[in-house]
Image (cartoon, rainbow, N blue to C red; front, side, top):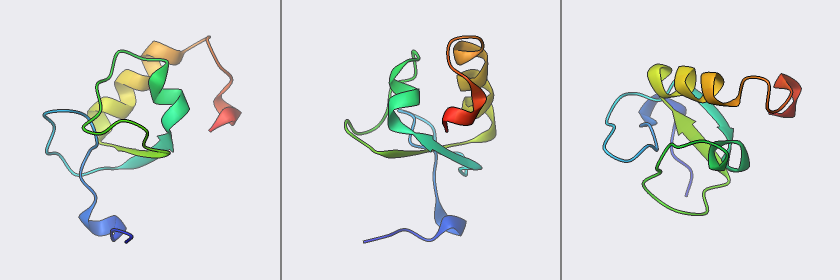
Length: 66
């Protein structure tokens, strides 16, 4: 069952903000972010958590890797 993108909520534990972006679950595993569920292939993030992900992965992996 697929959720409508307008209804997406951030997948980070304790966050209820509207998701703005989706990224690879493998990319999120490289950070300190704790997800609501393990093994998510496509992780939805709010603006604040996406910004945190970008800061934590800066210089670690190229931007084109999803």
